Length: 265
Length: 335
Image 1 (spheres, one colour):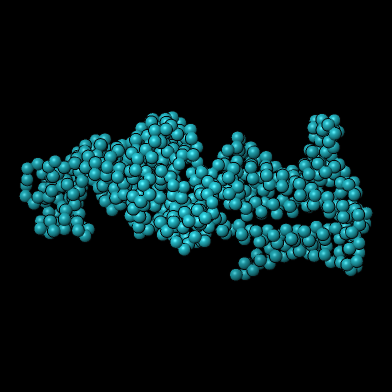
Image 2: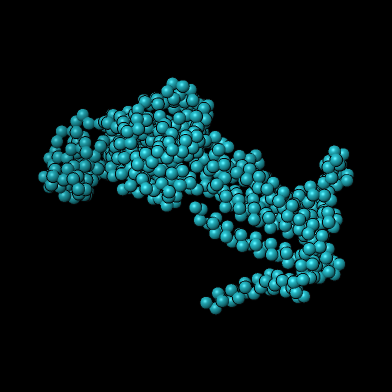
Protein backbone atom coordinates (compact mmCIF):
# COMPACT_ATOMS: atom_id res chain seq x y z
CA UNK A 1 0.00 0.00 0.00
CA UNK A 2 2.75 2.40 0.96
CA UNK A 3 4.65 1.82 -2.27
CA UNK A 4 1.48 2.44 -4.25
CA UNK A 5 0.96 5.73 -2.43
CA UNK A 6 4.54 6.73 -3.15
CA UNK A 7 4.03 5.89 -6.80
CA UNK A 8 0.97 8.10 -7.03
CA UNK A 9 2.53 11.02 -5.23
CA UNK A 10 5.59 10.84 -7.48
CA UNK A 11 3.53 10.68 -10.67
CA UNK A 12 1.19 13.48 -9.65
CA UNK A 13 4.04 15.59 -8.33
CA UNK A 14 5.92 15.23 -11.58
CA UNK A 15 2.85 16.23 -13.59
CA UNK A 16 2.21 19.20 -11.34
CA UNK A 17 5.74 20.53 -11.47
CA UNK A 18 6.22 19.89 -15.16
CA UNK A 19 2.81 20.76 -16.61
CA UNK A 20 0.24 22.14 -14.26
CA UNK A 21 2.23 24.90 -12.54
CA UNK A 22 3.75 26.40 -15.73
CA UNK A 23 0.42 26.37 -17.55
CA UNK A 24 -1.36 27.87 -14.56
CA UNK A 25 1.35 30.53 -14.41
CA UNK A 26 0.56 31.58 -17.96
CA UNK A 27 -3.06 32.06 -16.97
CA UNK A 28 -2.03 33.98 -13.86
CA UNK A 29 0.48 36.22 -15.63
CA UNK A 30 -1.90 36.91 -18.47
CA UNK A 31 -4.56 38.35 -16.22
CA UNK A 32 -2.19 39.93 -13.67
CA UNK A 33 -3.28 43.40 -14.81
CA UNK A 34 -6.90 42.58 -15.55
CA UNK A 35 -8.73 41.82 -18.73
CA UNK A 36 -8.31 45.13 -20.59
CA UNK A 37 -4.61 44.73 -21.57
CA UNK A 38 -5.25 41.15 -22.65
CA UNK A 39 -8.08 42.28 -24.85
CA UNK A 40 -5.91 45.01 -26.34
CA UNK A 41 -3.03 42.59 -26.98
CA UNK A 42 -5.31 40.12 -28.74
CA UNK A 43 -7.08 42.68 -30.91
CA UNK A 44 -4.07 44.34 -32.50
CA UNK A 45 -4.06 43.89 -36.30
CA UNK A 46 -0.93 41.72 -36.02
CA UNK A 47 -2.55 39.39 -33.45
CA UNK A 48 -5.79 39.17 -35.43
CA UNK A 49 -3.91 38.30 -38.57
CA UNK A 50 -1.74 35.73 -36.78
CA UNK A 51 -4.83 33.99 -35.42
CA UNK A 52 -6.49 34.11 -38.84
CA UNK A 53 -3.36 32.71 -40.53
CA UNK A 54 -2.98 29.87 -38.01
CA UNK A 55 -6.61 28.86 -38.50
CA UNK A 56 -6.35 29.16 -42.28
CA UNK A 57 -3.20 27.02 -42.53
CA UNK A 58 -4.72 24.42 -40.20
CA UNK A 59 -7.95 24.41 -42.19
CA UNK A 60 -6.01 23.52 -45.35
CA UNK A 61 -3.34 21.18 -43.94
CA UNK A 62 -5.66 19.03 -41.81
CA UNK A 63 -8.19 18.12 -44.54
CA UNK A 64 -5.31 17.33 -46.92
CA UNK A 65 -3.86 14.99 -44.31
CA UNK A 66 -7.27 13.44 -43.66
CA UNK A 67 -7.60 12.43 -47.31
CA UNK A 68 -4.03 11.15 -47.43
CA UNK A 69 -4.38 9.47 -44.03
CA UNK A 70 -7.52 7.54 -44.92
CA UNK A 71 -6.15 6.36 -48.26
CA UNK A 72 -2.72 5.42 -46.89
CA UNK A 73 -4.20 3.94 -43.70
CA UNK A 74 -6.54 1.61 -45.59
CA UNK A 75 -3.82 0.65 -48.07
CA UNK A 76 -1.39 -0.15 -45.26
CA UNK A 77 -3.89 -2.08 -43.16
CA UNK A 78 -5.08 -4.11 -46.15
CA UNK A 79 -1.52 -4.87 -47.31
CA UNK A 80 -2.20 -3.19 -50.65
CA UNK A 81 0.90 -1.03 -50.40
CA UNK A 82 4.19 -1.85 -52.08
CA UNK A 83 7.05 -1.93 -49.54
CA UNK A 84 4.65 -1.48 -46.62
CA UNK A 85 7.41 -1.44 -43.98
CA UNK A 86 9.25 1.36 -45.72
CA UNK A 87 6.08 3.40 -46.16
CA UNK A 88 5.22 2.79 -42.51
CA UNK A 89 8.65 4.03 -41.50
CA UNK A 90 8.37 7.12 -43.71
CA UNK A 91 4.99 8.01 -42.26
CA UNK A 92 6.49 7.92 -38.76
CA UNK A 93 9.39 10.13 -39.80
CA UNK A 94 7.77 13.43 -38.71
CA UNK A 95 7.35 11.95 -35.22
CA UNK A 96 11.05 11.22 -34.96
CA UNK A 97 12.46 14.25 -36.75
CA UNK A 98 12.91 17.63 -35.15
CA UNK A 99 10.48 20.12 -36.76
CA UNK A 100 13.39 22.51 -37.34
CA UNK A 101 15.07 19.89 -39.53
CA UNK A 102 11.81 19.46 -41.44
CA UNK A 103 11.75 23.22 -41.95
CA UNK A 104 15.34 23.19 -43.20
CA UNK A 105 14.60 20.33 -45.58
CA UNK A 106 11.69 22.21 -47.09
CA UNK A 107 13.82 25.34 -47.24
CA UNK A 108 16.56 23.67 -49.30
CA UNK A 109 14.06 22.11 -51.69
CA UNK A 110 11.69 25.03 -52.20
CA UNK A 111 14.03 27.98 -51.58
CA UNK A 112 16.13 29.88 -54.10
CA UNK A 113 18.51 27.39 -55.73
CA UNK A 114 16.37 24.45 -54.59
CA UNK A 115 15.27 21.98 -57.28
CA UNK A 116 11.57 22.48 -56.92
CA UNK A 117 11.69 26.08 -55.69
CA UNK A 118 13.35 27.51 -58.81
CA UNK A 119 10.99 25.67 -61.12
CA UNK A 120 7.92 26.80 -59.19
CA UNK A 121 9.23 30.37 -58.99
CA UNK A 122 9.68 30.36 -62.78
CA UNK A 123 5.98 29.41 -63.00
CA UNK A 124 4.95 32.20 -60.67
CA UNK A 125 4.43 30.24 -57.46
CA UNK A 126 6.20 31.47 -54.36
CA UNK A 127 6.31 28.68 -51.76
CA UNK A 128 8.64 29.95 -49.08
CA UNK A 129 7.61 32.99 -47.02
CA UNK A 130 3.99 32.53 -48.11
CA UNK A 131 0.95 30.42 -47.35
CA UNK A 132 1.89 27.36 -49.50
CA UNK A 133 5.12 26.99 -47.49
CA UNK A 134 3.27 27.24 -44.18
CA UNK A 135 0.75 24.63 -45.33
CA UNK A 136 3.52 22.29 -46.51
CA UNK A 137 5.45 22.52 -43.24
CA UNK A 138 2.30 22.07 -41.16
CA UNK A 139 1.05 19.13 -43.24
CA UNK A 140 4.46 17.49 -42.92
CA UNK A 141 4.60 17.59 -39.13
CA UNK A 142 0.97 16.43 -38.79
CA UNK A 143 1.28 13.63 -41.33
CA UNK A 144 1.30 10.58 -38.99
CA UNK A 145 -1.68 11.44 -36.77
CA UNK A 146 -4.59 10.38 -38.99
CA UNK A 147 -2.80 7.34 -40.45
CA UNK A 148 -1.83 6.05 -36.99
CA UNK A 149 -5.45 6.27 -35.83
CA UNK A 150 -6.89 4.65 -38.97
CA UNK A 151 -4.64 1.60 -39.39
CA UNK A 152 -5.55 -0.34 -36.22
CA UNK A 153 -9.28 0.24 -36.74
CA UNK A 154 -9.18 -0.93 -40.36
CA UNK A 155 -7.25 -4.02 -39.24
CA UNK A 156 -9.77 -4.71 -36.50
CA UNK A 157 -12.95 -4.43 -38.57
CA UNK A 158 -11.51 -6.71 -41.26
CA UNK A 159 -12.74 -7.06 -44.82
CA UNK A 160 -15.97 -8.98 -44.24
CA UNK A 161 -18.30 -6.00 -43.92
CA UNK A 162 -17.02 -4.66 -47.24
CA UNK A 163 -17.35 -8.09 -48.84
CA UNK A 164 -20.91 -8.34 -47.52
CA UNK A 165 -21.69 -4.98 -49.11
CA UNK A 166 -20.19 -6.22 -52.39
CA UNK A 167 -22.39 -9.33 -52.42
CA UNK A 168 -25.38 -7.03 -51.84
CA UNK A 169 -24.56 -5.14 -55.04
CA UNK A 170 -22.53 -2.18 -53.77
CA UNK A 171 -19.58 -0.96 -55.86
CA UNK A 172 -16.29 0.14 -54.31
CA UNK A 173 -17.23 3.79 -53.99
CA UNK A 174 -20.60 3.10 -52.35
CA UNK A 175 -19.01 0.59 -50.00
CA UNK A 176 -16.39 3.14 -48.99
CA UNK A 177 -18.91 5.87 -48.19
CA UNK A 178 -21.60 3.72 -46.60
CA UNK A 179 -19.59 1.01 -44.81
CA UNK A 180 -15.87 1.75 -44.46
CA UNK A 181 -15.97 5.46 -43.62
CA UNK A 182 -18.75 5.17 -40.98
CA UNK A 183 -16.73 2.43 -39.28
CA UNK A 184 -13.74 4.77 -39.15
CA UNK A 185 -15.58 7.87 -38.02
CA UNK A 186 -14.44 7.98 -34.38
CA UNK A 187 -10.84 7.11 -35.16
CA UNK A 188 -10.91 9.75 -37.87
CA UNK A 189 -12.37 12.37 -35.55
CA UNK A 190 -9.67 11.59 -33.00
CA UNK A 191 -6.96 11.90 -35.65
CA UNK A 192 -8.41 15.22 -36.81
CA UNK A 193 -8.41 16.60 -33.27
CA UNK A 194 -4.80 15.56 -32.71
CA UNK A 195 -3.72 16.98 -36.08
CA UNK A 196 -5.54 20.23 -35.42
CA UNK A 197 -3.85 20.68 -32.06
CA UNK A 198 -0.46 19.95 -33.58
CA UNK A 199 -1.08 22.20 -36.59
CA UNK A 200 -2.18 25.21 -34.54
CA UNK A 201 0.78 24.92 -32.21
CA UNK A 202 3.47 24.14 -34.78
CA UNK A 203 6.51 26.37 -34.36
CA UNK A 204 9.81 24.83 -35.48
CA UNK A 205 9.23 23.97 -39.11
CA UNK A 206 6.97 26.94 -39.68
CA UNK A 207 9.46 29.42 -38.20
CA UNK A 208 12.01 28.45 -40.87
CA UNK A 209 9.78 28.57 -43.94
CA UNK A 210 7.57 31.50 -42.91
CA UNK A 211 10.07 34.36 -42.76
CA UNK A 212 7.98 35.67 -39.84
CA UNK A 213 6.64 38.73 -41.66
CA UNK A 214 4.23 40.53 -39.30
CA UNK A 215 0.71 40.77 -40.72
CA UNK A 216 1.63 38.41 -43.58
CA UNK A 217 3.29 35.11 -42.64
CA UNK A 218 3.29 35.29 -38.86
CA UNK A 219 1.24 32.54 -37.19
CA UNK A 220 0.08 32.61 -33.58
CA UNK A 221 3.04 30.67 -32.12
CA UNK A 222 5.46 32.91 -34.08
CA UNK A 223 3.67 35.95 -32.64
CA UNK A 224 4.17 34.63 -29.12
CA UNK A 225 7.85 34.16 -29.85
CA UNK A 226 8.28 37.65 -31.32
CA UNK A 227 6.53 39.40 -28.46
CA UNK A 228 8.55 37.41 -25.96
CA UNK A 229 11.78 38.47 -27.59
CA UNK A 230 10.65 42.11 -27.55
CA UNK A 231 10.00 42.00 -23.79
CA UNK A 232 6.26 42.46 -24.41
CA UNK A 233 5.23 40.21 -21.50
CA UNK A 234 1.51 40.91 -21.53
CA UNK A 235 1.37 40.52 -25.31
CA UNK A 236 3.26 37.22 -25.23
CA UNK A 237 1.20 35.84 -22.36
CA UNK A 238 -2.08 36.85 -23.95
CA UNK A 239 -1.28 35.15 -27.23
CA UNK A 240 0.13 32.16 -25.33
CA UNK A 241 -3.01 31.99 -23.26
CA UNK A 242 -5.12 31.94 -26.44
CA UNK A 243 -3.09 28.94 -27.63
CA UNK A 244 -3.47 27.25 -24.25
CA UNK A 245 -7.26 27.72 -24.35
CA UNK A 246 -7.33 26.06 -27.76
CA UNK A 247 -5.30 23.16 -26.30
CA UNK A 248 -7.75 22.70 -23.45
CA UNK A 249 -10.66 22.63 -25.90
CA UNK A 250 -8.81 20.05 -28.00
CA UNK A 251 -8.07 17.98 -24.91
CA UNK A 252 -11.73 17.99 -23.93
CA UNK A 253 -12.75 16.91 -27.42
CA UNK A 254 -10.16 14.10 -27.29
CA UNK A 255 -11.44 12.82 -23.96
CA UNK A 256 -15.01 12.73 -25.23
CA UNK A 257 -14.00 11.10 -28.51
CA UNK A 258 -11.75 8.46 -26.96
CA UNK A 259 -14.71 7.34 -24.88
CA UNK A 260 -16.80 6.97 -28.03
CA UNK A 261 -13.94 5.15 -29.70
CA UNK A 262 -13.76 2.54 -26.97
CA UNK A 263 -17.37 1.47 -27.40
CA UNK A 264 -18.02 1.39 -31.14
CA UNK A 265 -21.78 1.66 -31.43
CA UNK B 1 -28.97 -21.40 -60.13
CA UNK B 2 -26.80 -24.33 -61.24
CA UNK B 3 -23.09 -24.21 -60.44
CA UNK B 4 -20.34 -25.77 -62.55
CA UNK B 5 -16.74 -25.52 -61.47
CA UNK B 6 -14.02 -26.60 -63.90
CA UNK B 7 -10.44 -27.27 -62.82
CA UNK B 8 -10.40 -24.73 -59.98
CA UNK B 9 -7.01 -24.23 -58.31
CA UNK B 10 -6.09 -21.69 -55.68
CA UNK B 11 -2.95 -21.15 -53.63
CA UNK B 12 -2.24 -18.71 -50.80
CA UNK B 13 1.51 -18.26 -50.75
CA UNK B 14 2.81 -21.84 -50.83
CA UNK B 15 -0.40 -23.29 -49.33
CA UNK B 16 -2.53 -25.19 -51.85
CA UNK B 17 -6.12 -24.42 -50.84
CA UNK B 18 -7.67 -26.09 -53.92
CA UNK B 19 -6.11 -28.48 -56.44
CA UNK B 20 -7.86 -28.83 -59.79
CA UNK B 21 -11.41 -29.11 -58.43
CA UNK B 22 -14.20 -29.96 -60.87
CA UNK B 23 -17.77 -30.36 -59.62
CA UNK B 24 -21.34 -29.59 -60.70
CA UNK B 25 -24.21 -28.66 -58.37
CA UNK B 26 -27.82 -28.87 -59.44
CA UNK B 27 -30.30 -26.02 -59.31
CA UNK B 28 -32.66 -25.92 -56.32
CA UNK B 29 -30.70 -28.33 -54.15
CA UNK B 30 -29.42 -27.77 -50.63
CA UNK B 31 -25.76 -28.74 -50.78
CA UNK B 32 -23.19 -29.05 -47.99
CA UNK B 33 -19.50 -28.46 -48.61
CA UNK B 34 -18.15 -30.68 -45.86
CA UNK B 35 -14.61 -31.33 -44.71
CA UNK B 36 -11.98 -30.75 -42.07
CA UNK B 37 -10.71 -27.23 -41.31
CA UNK B 38 -8.21 -25.96 -43.85
CA UNK B 39 -9.44 -28.42 -46.46
CA UNK B 40 -10.45 -25.72 -48.93
CA UNK B 41 -14.24 -25.74 -48.62
CA UNK B 42 -14.59 -22.08 -47.62
CA UNK B 43 -12.23 -21.04 -50.40
CA UNK B 44 -14.38 -22.92 -52.90
CA UNK B 45 -17.52 -21.16 -51.64
CA UNK B 46 -15.83 -17.77 -51.82
CA UNK B 47 -14.72 -18.49 -55.39
CA UNK B 48 -18.33 -19.27 -56.34
CA UNK B 49 -19.33 -15.95 -54.73
CA UNK B 50 -16.60 -13.97 -56.49
CA UNK B 51 -14.92 -13.00 -53.22
CA UNK B 52 -11.80 -14.90 -54.28
CA UNK B 53 -10.35 -15.22 -57.76
CA UNK B 54 -9.14 -18.73 -58.71
CA UNK B 55 -5.57 -19.09 -59.98
CA UNK B 56 -6.84 -21.49 -62.62
CA UNK B 57 -10.21 -22.86 -63.72
CA UNK B 58 -13.60 -21.43 -64.65
CA UNK B 59 -16.81 -20.78 -62.69
CA UNK B 60 -20.11 -21.26 -64.55
CA UNK B 61 -23.41 -20.12 -63.03
CA UNK B 62 -26.48 -21.29 -64.98
CA UNK B 63 -24.09 -22.12 -67.80
CA UNK B 64 -22.61 -18.63 -68.09
CA UNK B 65 -18.90 -18.09 -67.45
CA UNK B 66 -18.82 -15.82 -64.38
CA UNK B 67 -15.13 -16.24 -63.49
CA UNK B 68 -14.29 -12.60 -64.19
CA UNK B 69 -17.60 -11.11 -63.04
CA UNK B 70 -17.34 -9.23 -59.70
CA UNK B 71 -19.32 -10.46 -56.68
CA UNK B 72 -21.81 -7.60 -56.86
CA UNK B 73 -23.04 -8.71 -60.29
CA UNK B 74 -23.39 -12.45 -59.61
CA UNK B 75 -26.89 -12.35 -58.14
CA UNK B 76 -25.90 -14.23 -55.03
CA UNK B 77 -26.63 -13.91 -51.33
CA UNK B 78 -23.74 -14.56 -48.96
CA UNK B 79 -23.84 -15.24 -45.22
CA UNK B 80 -20.62 -15.03 -43.18
CA UNK B 81 -19.71 -17.08 -40.14
CA UNK B 82 -19.26 -13.95 -38.02
CA UNK B 83 -22.35 -12.25 -39.47
CA UNK B 84 -20.52 -9.23 -41.00
CA UNK B 85 -23.29 -7.02 -39.63
CA UNK B 86 -23.00 -3.30 -40.39
CA UNK B 87 -22.64 -2.01 -36.80
CA UNK B 88 -23.57 1.60 -37.51
CA UNK B 89 -26.88 0.69 -39.18
CA UNK B 90 -30.11 -0.45 -37.54
CA UNK B 91 -31.51 -3.91 -38.24
CA UNK B 92 -33.91 -2.31 -40.73
CA UNK B 93 -31.10 -0.52 -42.59
CA UNK B 94 -28.90 -3.63 -42.53
CA UNK B 95 -31.63 -5.74 -44.13
CA UNK B 96 -32.58 -2.95 -46.55
CA UNK B 97 -28.98 -2.26 -47.65
CA UNK B 98 -29.16 -4.22 -50.90
CA UNK B 99 -32.54 -2.67 -51.76
CA UNK B 100 -31.18 0.82 -51.14
CA UNK B 101 -28.27 0.10 -53.50
CA UNK B 102 -30.87 -0.89 -56.10
CA UNK B 103 -32.75 2.38 -55.48
CA UNK B 104 -35.98 0.66 -54.48
CA UNK B 105 -38.56 3.26 -53.37
CA UNK B 106 -39.11 3.75 -49.63
CA UNK B 107 -42.60 2.25 -49.42
CA UNK B 108 -41.59 -0.93 -51.23
CA UNK B 109 -38.42 -1.15 -49.18
CA UNK B 110 -40.30 -0.86 -45.89
CA UNK B 111 -42.76 -3.54 -46.94
CA UNK B 112 -40.03 -5.92 -48.14
CA UNK B 113 -37.93 -5.43 -45.01
CA UNK B 114 -40.95 -6.04 -42.76
CA UNK B 115 -41.73 -9.23 -44.69
CA UNK B 116 -38.16 -10.47 -44.33
CA UNK B 117 -37.99 -9.61 -40.63
CA UNK B 118 -41.15 -11.66 -40.20
CA UNK B 119 -39.59 -14.53 -42.12
CA UNK B 120 -36.54 -14.58 -39.82
CA UNK B 121 -38.62 -13.95 -36.67
CA UNK B 122 -37.11 -10.56 -35.91
CA UNK B 123 -40.35 -8.56 -36.02
CA UNK B 124 -40.24 -5.71 -33.54
CA UNK B 125 -36.45 -5.49 -33.53
CA UNK B 126 -36.16 -3.32 -36.66
CA UNK B 127 -34.88 -0.26 -34.80
CA UNK B 128 -32.24 -2.07 -32.76
CA UNK B 129 -28.54 -1.99 -33.59
CA UNK B 130 -26.66 -5.28 -34.24
CA UNK B 131 -24.78 -4.89 -30.94
CA UNK B 132 -28.15 -5.15 -29.17
CA UNK B 133 -28.91 -8.57 -30.69
CA UNK B 134 -27.84 -12.06 -29.65
CA UNK B 135 -25.59 -14.12 -31.94
CA UNK B 136 -28.51 -16.13 -33.30
CA UNK B 137 -30.51 -12.98 -33.97
CA UNK B 138 -27.56 -11.36 -35.74
CA UNK B 139 -27.15 -14.36 -37.99
CA UNK B 140 -30.87 -14.33 -38.83
CA UNK B 141 -30.56 -10.62 -39.62
CA UNK B 142 -27.61 -11.40 -41.90
CA UNK B 143 -29.74 -14.06 -43.64
CA UNK B 144 -32.61 -11.61 -44.12
CA UNK B 145 -30.12 -9.10 -45.53
CA UNK B 146 -28.81 -11.68 -48.02
CA UNK B 147 -32.34 -12.72 -49.00
CA UNK B 148 -33.55 -9.13 -49.50
CA UNK B 149 -32.11 -8.90 -53.00
CA UNK B 150 -33.84 -12.18 -53.95
CA UNK B 151 -30.71 -14.12 -54.87
CA UNK B 152 -31.10 -17.27 -56.93
CA UNK B 153 -28.06 -18.66 -55.15
CA UNK B 154 -27.63 -18.49 -51.40
CA UNK B 155 -24.12 -19.21 -50.06
CA UNK B 156 -23.45 -19.69 -46.34
CA UNK B 157 -19.93 -19.95 -44.89
CA UNK B 158 -20.11 -21.95 -41.62
CA UNK B 159 -23.29 -20.04 -40.80
CA UNK B 160 -23.84 -21.64 -37.40
CA UNK B 161 -20.20 -22.10 -36.44
CA UNK B 162 -20.12 -19.21 -33.95
CA UNK B 163 -23.38 -20.12 -32.20
CA UNK B 164 -24.00 -22.32 -29.19
CA UNK B 165 -25.41 -25.83 -29.60
CA UNK B 166 -29.06 -25.11 -28.87
CA UNK B 167 -29.32 -22.08 -31.14
CA UNK B 168 -27.43 -23.99 -33.83
CA UNK B 169 -29.99 -26.81 -33.74
CA UNK B 170 -32.88 -24.33 -34.03
CA UNK B 171 -31.33 -22.49 -36.94
CA UNK B 172 -30.59 -25.74 -38.79
CA UNK B 173 -34.20 -26.81 -38.79
CA UNK B 174 -35.21 -23.35 -39.74
CA UNK B 175 -32.68 -23.09 -42.62
CA UNK B 176 -34.08 -26.28 -44.10
CA UNK B 177 -37.60 -24.80 -44.02
CA UNK B 178 -36.33 -21.52 -45.41
CA UNK B 179 -34.64 -23.29 -48.31
CA UNK B 180 -37.97 -24.91 -49.26
CA UNK B 181 -39.76 -21.55 -49.00
CA UNK B 182 -37.46 -19.22 -50.92
CA UNK B 183 -36.78 -21.63 -53.76
CA UNK B 184 -33.12 -20.73 -54.17
CA UNK B 185 -30.15 -23.00 -54.70
CA UNK B 186 -28.40 -23.15 -51.34
CA UNK B 187 -24.80 -24.11 -50.60
CA UNK B 188 -23.39 -24.08 -47.08
CA UNK B 189 -19.97 -24.84 -45.69
CA UNK B 190 -19.60 -26.92 -42.53
CA UNK B 191 -17.04 -29.09 -40.78
CA UNK B 192 -19.82 -30.81 -38.81
CA UNK B 193 -20.81 -34.10 -40.49
CA UNK B 194 -23.99 -34.32 -38.43
CA UNK B 195 -25.09 -30.89 -39.65
CA UNK B 196 -24.36 -31.89 -43.24
CA UNK B 197 -26.20 -35.23 -42.92
CA UNK B 198 -29.22 -33.64 -41.30
CA UNK B 199 -29.63 -30.66 -43.63
CA UNK B 200 -28.26 -31.40 -47.04
CA UNK B 201 -29.73 -33.06 -50.13
CA UNK B 202 -26.21 -33.50 -51.35
CA UNK B 203 -22.78 -33.50 -49.74
CA UNK B 204 -19.50 -32.52 -51.38
CA UNK B 205 -16.73 -33.88 -49.16
CA UNK B 206 -13.54 -31.84 -49.53
CA UNK B 207 -10.18 -32.66 -47.98
CA UNK B 208 -6.71 -31.27 -48.61
CA UNK B 209 -7.88 -29.17 -51.57
CA UNK B 210 -9.51 -32.10 -53.38
CA UNK B 211 -13.00 -33.52 -53.63
CA UNK B 212 -13.17 -36.94 -51.97
CA UNK B 213 -16.77 -37.76 -52.91
CA UNK B 214 -20.04 -36.16 -54.03
CA UNK B 215 -23.41 -37.75 -53.25
CA UNK B 216 -26.44 -37.89 -51.01
CA UNK B 217 -25.84 -38.31 -47.26
CA UNK B 218 -26.90 -41.97 -47.54
CA UNK B 219 -24.61 -42.64 -50.48
CA UNK B 220 -21.63 -41.24 -48.62
CA UNK B 221 -22.49 -43.12 -45.44
CA UNK B 222 -23.30 -46.47 -47.05
CA UNK B 223 -20.92 -46.38 -49.99
CA UNK B 224 -17.93 -44.30 -48.97
CA UNK B 225 -15.40 -43.87 -51.77
CA UNK B 226 -12.51 -44.52 -49.42
CA UNK B 227 -11.50 -44.88 -45.79
CA UNK B 228 -11.30 -41.10 -45.33
CA UNK B 229 -14.92 -40.57 -46.36
CA UNK B 230 -15.99 -43.46 -44.17
CA UNK B 231 -14.15 -42.19 -41.12
CA UNK B 232 -15.27 -38.59 -41.64
CA UNK B 233 -18.96 -39.49 -41.90
CA UNK B 234 -19.72 -41.29 -38.69
CA UNK B 235 -17.84 -43.40 -36.21
CA UNK B 236 -15.47 -46.16 -37.32
CA UNK B 237 -13.34 -48.73 -35.61
CA UNK B 238 -10.60 -50.98 -36.89
CA UNK B 239 -11.17 -54.73 -37.00
CA UNK B 240 -8.08 -56.45 -38.33
CA UNK B 241 -7.01 -54.49 -41.40
CA UNK B 242 -10.52 -53.17 -42.12
CA UNK B 243 -12.43 -50.08 -41.10
CA UNK B 244 -15.94 -50.93 -39.85
CA UNK B 245 -18.79 -49.03 -38.24
CA UNK B 246 -19.02 -49.90 -34.51
CA UNK B 247 -22.70 -50.81 -34.94
CA UNK B 248 -21.82 -53.24 -37.75
CA UNK B 249 -19.91 -55.62 -35.49
CA UNK B 250 -21.55 -58.68 -33.95
CA UNK B 251 -20.55 -59.98 -30.53
CA UNK B 252 -20.73 -63.72 -29.75
CA UNK B 253 -20.18 -65.34 -26.40
CA UNK B 254 -19.24 -68.67 -28.06
CA UNK B 255 -16.64 -69.37 -30.69
CA UNK B 256 -18.13 -68.59 -34.14
CA UNK B 257 -16.90 -68.97 -37.73
CA UNK B 258 -14.85 -65.97 -38.99
CA UNK B 259 -15.06 -64.26 -35.60
CA UNK B 260 -11.90 -63.16 -33.82
CA UNK B 261 -11.28 -63.64 -30.14
CA UNK B 262 -11.14 -60.58 -27.90
CA UNK B 263 -11.35 -59.64 -24.25
CA UNK B 264 -13.91 -57.15 -22.97
CA UNK B 265 -12.06 -54.22 -21.47
CA UNK B 266 -14.93 -51.98 -20.49
CA UNK B 267 -18.65 -51.44 -21.11
CA UNK B 268 -20.39 -48.10 -21.03
CA UNK B 269 -24.11 -47.35 -21.28
CA UNK B 270 -24.88 -44.42 -23.60
CA UNK B 271 -28.67 -44.35 -23.26
CA UNK B 272 -30.20 -46.47 -26.00
CA UNK B 273 -26.79 -47.87 -26.95
CA UNK B 274 -23.98 -49.45 -25.06
CA UNK B 275 -20.38 -49.17 -26.06
CA UNK B 276 -18.10 -52.15 -25.61
CA UNK B 277 -14.33 -51.77 -25.84
CA UNK B 278 -12.62 -55.10 -26.49
CA UNK B 279 -8.91 -55.89 -26.86
CA UNK B 280 -7.65 -58.20 -29.59
CA UNK B 281 -4.76 -60.62 -28.95
CA UNK B 282 -2.43 -58.18 -30.77
CA UNK B 283 -3.33 -55.44 -28.30
CA UNK B 284 -5.52 -53.33 -30.62
CA UNK B 285 -8.79 -52.04 -29.15
CA UNK B 286 -12.04 -52.52 -31.07
CA UNK B 287 -15.10 -50.43 -30.29
CA UNK B 288 -18.46 -52.12 -30.69
CA UNK B 289 -21.83 -50.46 -30.42
CA UNK B 290 -24.78 -52.66 -29.38
CA UNK B 291 -28.24 -51.89 -28.09
CA UNK B 292 -28.58 -51.79 -24.35
CA UNK B 293 -31.00 -54.72 -24.44
CA UNK B 294 -28.56 -56.83 -26.42
CA UNK B 295 -25.70 -55.98 -24.06
CA UNK B 296 -27.80 -57.04 -21.06
CA UNK B 297 -28.86 -60.24 -22.80
CA UNK B 298 -25.19 -61.15 -23.41
CA UNK B 299 -24.45 -60.48 -19.70
CA UNK B 300 -21.07 -59.02 -20.61
CA UNK B 301 -18.59 -57.97 -17.98
CA UNK B 302 -15.04 -56.64 -18.12
CA UNK B 303 -12.59 -59.53 -18.49
CA UNK B 304 -14.98 -61.79 -20.45
CA UNK B 305 -13.72 -63.46 -23.60
CA UNK B 306 -15.93 -62.75 -26.63
CA UNK B 307 -15.82 -63.31 -30.40
CA UNK B 308 -16.20 -60.39 -32.84
CA UNK B 309 -17.25 -60.43 -36.49
CA UNK B 310 -18.28 -57.76 -38.96
CA UNK B 311 -21.91 -58.30 -39.99
CA UNK B 312 -21.66 -60.03 -43.40
CA UNK B 313 -22.19 -57.62 -46.33
CA UNK B 314 -21.56 -54.51 -44.26
CA UNK B 315 -19.59 -51.45 -45.37
CA UNK B 316 -15.86 -51.92 -44.85
CA UNK B 317 -12.82 -50.13 -46.21
CA UNK B 318 -9.20 -51.18 -46.17
CA UNK B 319 -7.27 -49.10 -43.68
CA UNK B 320 -3.91 -49.20 -45.45
CA UNK B 321 -4.58 -45.77 -46.95
CA UNK B 322 -6.22 -44.53 -43.83
CA UNK B 323 -3.74 -45.05 -41.05
CA UNK B 324 -3.78 -41.36 -40.18
CA UNK B 325 -7.47 -40.97 -39.48
CA UNK B 326 -8.66 -44.46 -38.58
CA UNK B 327 -7.16 -43.99 -35.15
CA UNK B 328 -9.98 -41.73 -33.99
CA UNK B 329 -12.94 -44.07 -33.36
CA UNK B 330 -16.26 -42.67 -32.18
CA UNK B 331 -15.15 -39.06 -32.42
CA UNK B 332 -17.88 -38.19 -34.87
CA UNK B 333 -20.66 -40.14 -33.20
CA UNK B 334 -21.50 -37.32 -30.83
CA UNK B 335 -21.08 -34.61 -33.46
